[in-house]
Image (tube, rainbow, N blue to C red):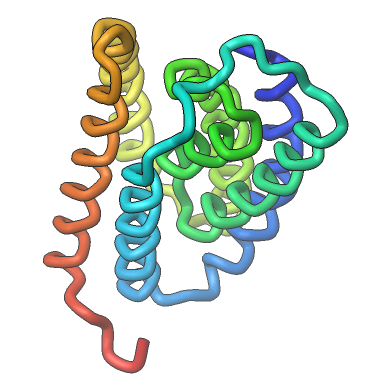
Length: 189
């Protein structure tokens, strides 16, 4: 993991997550879910666009890379906060775009941002009394177990060029489709 990349992206994203989560609380939940599914589809399509290279694992953070990380971290944090998510499926493409590192490195760097964005958003919602704590605790426990197995899978798939990206996109599309089917198109979107 490149701590400098992760730190810049996460720091800027926390500011965005605080602002985004404040705005997200003003939007009806069904509309929020529907819009979220559309964003997921857009991110999935963007991830399928071929990259010029597999990335540079030794990326150096210069002023240009730092500026891109800061701007994309702020925007990604705002979107993640708005939808009330950790934002991993947004963070990975954001870090890829900003830094040019390989996807496995971006996944590693994204974990700091996911935690920071999620904690910021959760604190904002908790201060408004909008968290069901027993459900939240169950999801945290499930997420910890899933994270363990997901990490093992990511490392195993890293040697197969493109598989990790296709698996990532497939999961994003599947979840987005499920959300679209469950929410339908909200009236007067």
